[in-house]
Amino acid sequence: MPEEAWIEVLSAVDRTYADLVDYQEQLERQNARLQDMQAFLTSILASVSDVLIVLDRAGRIEQVSASLLARSGARAQALTGQDVARLVPPEDAARLAEVLDRLRADRRPAVLELALATPDGPEPLELSVAPRLDDRGRVAGFVLTGRPLGELRRAYAELTESHDALKSAQSLLVRNEKLASLGRLLAGVAHELNNPISFVYANAHALDRYVGKFETYFARVQDGASREDLVTLREQLRLDREITNLRQATQGARDGAERVRDIVEDLRRLSSDGAGERVSFDLAETARVAAHWVLRGAKEAPALTIDGPGTVQAWGRPGHIQQIVMNLVQNAVDAVEGRKGGAVTLTLAAEAGRARLTVSDNGPGVPAEVRASIFDPFFTTKSVGRGTGLGLSISLKIAEEHGGHLTLQDRPGSGAAFLLDLPAQGISG
Image (tube, rainbow, N blue to C red; front, side, top):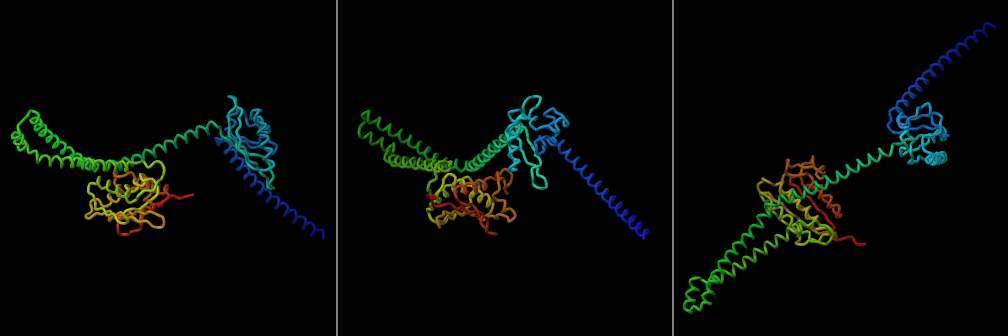
């Protein structure tokens, strides 16, 4: 019996020893993990550029980042266990203590501005204060992170400067797109103005010649020439025929001047910036003027067809809508350039309180792989120097600002077609 008892005791000792060895191994593994974690946290505290302060529940310093030590000029050993109020001027210490008291109660992070005491004087900080919770959800301490406001202000100033530069570049690109569209029309404008001006100029020369003949005749009348001499002079000068020509020259000069007036009026409407109040306008007339001016500037003008009602009322700024139509028609003209039988069609419709204009062509159409990107800024399928890639993007934005839509229609194998949909009248109330 005693022998069996000893065997049992020895067995229990072996089991206890084995457990102790196992516990020792677990403790060593946990200790290694703690050391790794401590090294990890130490590396973070040493590398972060922002100020970082770890406090216990009472507001005493447990750990600080190397960036704070560099700014405050203190050593970590000198700060550990000290009240955080030591790091800030007296006027900010009370505000910080108030924030910590509130976080102990509601546990909600807070942000405040205060100064960090440094050898060179107070340095403003934007400080974020968050509670540290234990495994039971109670506040065990606090974590304070902050960045000097000087750096934040510099970063904000740089961001503002970059944003202003971006807006300026965007405005410049939009202006260049408008100038590019206008430049493509200059040849047509010069031709349109040259014809009636040349007509007026030629008639003015004819009028000057007729005036000379009549001056000669009336000078002889004042000199007292006889009737027979005046009749002879009248026949020599062919005054009867010249009177008829004079009327024709006067009418021709008037027609030429009126043509110039009409061209200038079209240009005035074309160049309108569309500022001011939105109005009810004729989409059909706006589209007609815009399309004809684009075709006047084209090297090889395709056939233009305008279908639908003669008048379609829409609501908006005519100058802006005219820019959309010019962009769409110019794209259609470019698409059929060099193609035999190239044609551009404008189809107008008014239905369900909406005004609709479809601009289509019989060109190659829009490939399926680029349809999703067709309205993206700077996207273009044209060769270098033929476009900025902003025309459709700007047109889409203008249409949406008017409460409308600009969409690419699905017409496989039948060229491209864009639908501009606008409200027919303003929304009341």
